[in-house]
Picture 1 (tube, rainbow, N blue to C red):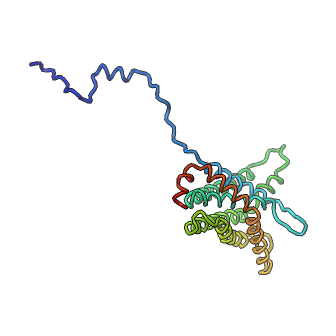
Picture 2 (cartoon, rainbow, N blue to C red):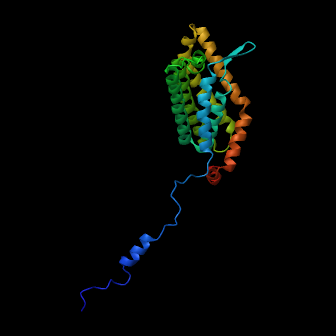
Picture 3 (tube, rainbow, N blue to C red):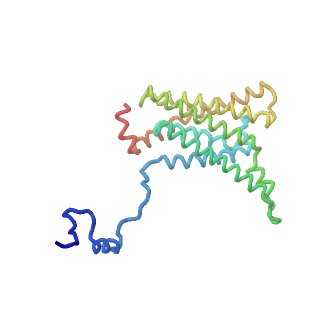
Length: 252
């Protein structure tokens, strides 16, 4: 009887020659990449971050229309709430929270970057240091007020939007949009105005109340005026988002 045992039939251990051939054969497999599902969320997230950064830059310029005085970012913040409504309605609270926190971090990061660039020593030939500081170096507390109000207000806006949808499902979108905006904008405006009012020279209760009410009413009116745009954006994304199209019948 031979001392070399024959491997049993069906053995999973390949013969040495076969193993060498397998390892020497060039691989034709495609390189590995993480799966990126089709979604519009990443585009909305990018828009969120850009709008917040641009809003804080635009807010450094005073703008006047007749007797109405505002800042250069007045038309951008409503867009942030439109995007917030779209994310909350289509993707839910967790996705909205991710978008809000991410844009908040990038907004704060942009402010830090601007501050670092401002304090760097200017070259002798650079004559625009004062203008650069005026545009990109607003009072730090103003930036903090804007970011904090945005963070809390947007989170409340998303929370109310989702909670009302749990009751109404696909019906009464207008109720979700208005109620969430009224709650979110109220807290946003209160936080911002409370911090910013003494900085810009408002030192009376009457002036403070006027500051809060004008800002709050304006933001709520803008939400109502642009509601058709919000409706259209939500409907457009719902029709084209595969995961929503699959789950929509269950929600209705």
